[in-house]
Length: 639
Image (cartoon, rainbow, N blue to C red; front, side, top):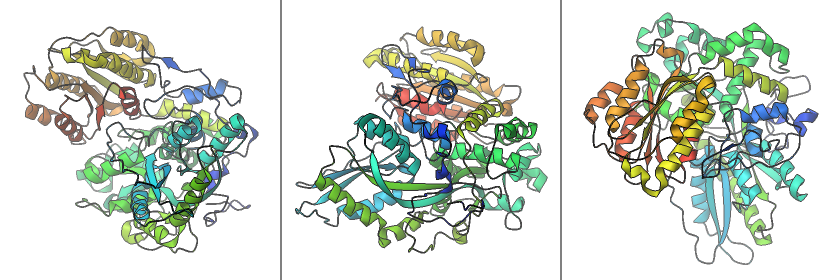
């Protein structure tokens, strides 16, 4: 969506070089133009014997305040995902795509198709938001016998991943991609700047938009109607009123709905979360652009943020996770969440929804997400690869594929393709919206806003339940698990509370309700002190951690979560699984504690750990010594 000279929103010019209002990036100010990859080794933490691991939460912004603007490339690792270099900063600064959040998750096991004999392979990493559409149209492309001039069949290997991961992997050479499509053209711009600083040439010279999708507040239709949707414009002020009302939905005549439960992703890790934060600040200021430090200093801004964040169920790195969990688990889990419009459309393909989901385009304004695609400018891209890439891109932009994108809830980038079902009111969206778009704030305001959010956000009370049974000595599992656990401790905020419960045949508290600000070093020492031995009292330990959190004086004041890592089956507990399940099953009111589970290694009972996570509206992970640091990093984004 572009913005006219008079500041009034206009209809987006699809496939123009101005790709969405938020692409005004922002490169508008001289400092922002220089924000290429301003990290250096500051903020990086060393692990014990396994290399570097991700910096503590917020180090991107902490370093920004103290750095000179230069183009140094750091060594932050998010094993085995992408390093958080240039592209992580891009999201942090302008919030235009998913950074950490769309990395390929540890628990995903994708089938990798084989390249037909004699075919020319195109490697195509792309933002995972459009995975269903890309899978569909690429499968058809690969089956359609497209060939180069020399007669070679063209085969496209499409790889869904985070936008930051896409660009960073290509820049580093870890992924020799031939074409790429991150969620935002900003990633292309910043990737090109980084590439020019090192090689004197762009990474991806020219691009076209593939699809468009605005960011919305998704809400169950009866709940939206209860606050006036359909009769008057709805926005962040309505969310604030719901969050601050102690009676919850009872104040609107529906006591059976309980409390208002809201969700958005972590603004330091995810596009939609950062956009939500921008929108809250704009709503508090009454502006649609020109947000200033003075606006953030006003008491009403602090109060507005605190009021909205109070209703947060948890944060997270994945917009898709919020959406699909919301659709699967109903209003007991979430009343509303900040999602992409395409996900609202997607919800109508899901069976057994308790109510329809609708998209609220906040009256204060919102942002667009675009999806550029272009050919990689690297030595491994041969003239024949370039020829094949042009054929594939032209195929994606052709009318049949653009029309198919509509089926998956995206707005086509091709201007000659008219919007049609399911982009209609029957699928919860309004194709005439959004009418107002918001301006991305300058760098100093973003920093100050994130610092303000850290003080006003909903903080966390976390218990880590860590298996130290004898089998953890095999394959250096405990050594790697300790590195991951230390990363979790490092990434918690100073105002969070942390408890540590290692277990084998019995459990022993190594720290209860430790304030992270004062006790972080002590907690790291406790993790380092662990050694393997004994059996596995898994169920007893989970129950002890859960009941510890349940006894909190004000359970709604913080995000209450248990994180469990185990490499085997329960062998020593007095409690049985069915009894544990009854004691922890989520109901959104009296039992609202999330239990994140990690099946660590091949011998862990994945089925049981999945059941525990699902019963508590949390997330299940498959972990290994190779990816455990990434697993803990992803879990930390929920807090």
